[in-house]
Image 1 (cartoon, rainbow, N blue to C red):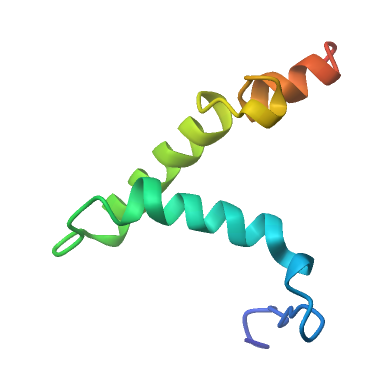
Image 2: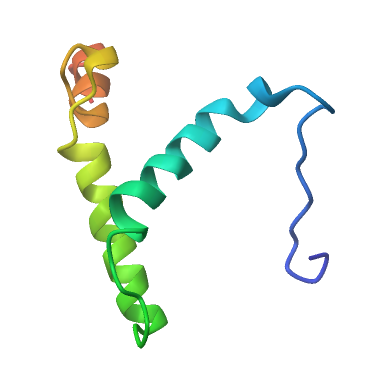
Amino acid sequence: MEKAGLSRSMSRKGCSPDNAACEGFFGRLKNEMYYNRKWFGVSIDEFMNTLNEYLYWYNGKRIKISLGAKSPLEYRKALDPAA
């Protein structure tokens, strides 16, 4: 990890809300993209393309009720129309 310039990040012991947003996102990613597909024989490039397509859809197309039935991108644009 040190060679790659990475550092370990951990929540406080017994405090799951510290990373609730990340856990929620990765749970949705696995349910919506990963588990519903057979990945045997898929190359890393194919997987990365599929992941990029999912992230584009998630941020630009997937509506969230908590964001006023907007996608995250639409919601951010509504907060700052100049963006």
